[in-house]
Length: 167
Image (cartoon, rainbow, N blue to C red):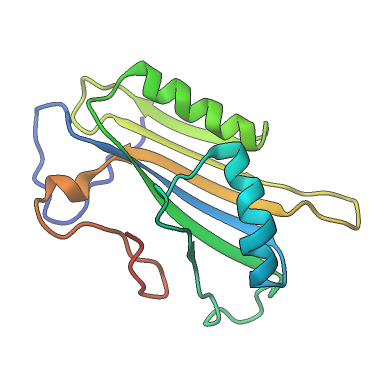
């Protein structure tokens, strides 16, 4: 069983989580042009997985602070809010969305909706190709988890490593 990941300030509870959920997308796309990223890659990505950001737009992560990183990789991040309570159909829809993007995922899951905070899925893949032309999407991490920030009754949203707010 995966350890429970609770944000600071959320008290432990014996009651199952019955609130809303969220899906957090973090995707690396090989592209040197932000214009091409906006006009070609993101529409193609959204044709496969929909608009996880609810129409608010993807966040482009600024990773200039990381030395020696591949400058042709652009990281985009988005959050999709999913109204609760948890149902098996939520998980089926999430899995279909993942596999529409790629059939190759490493998945860790805790899917006991009767356990407090017991629904969590973390899926990641990294494409490695011997071909000279790499696919546009080369790395992806997706998390499906209870939306604890809404439970805290105040500050919601996540922050990226660069300190910019995500939602």
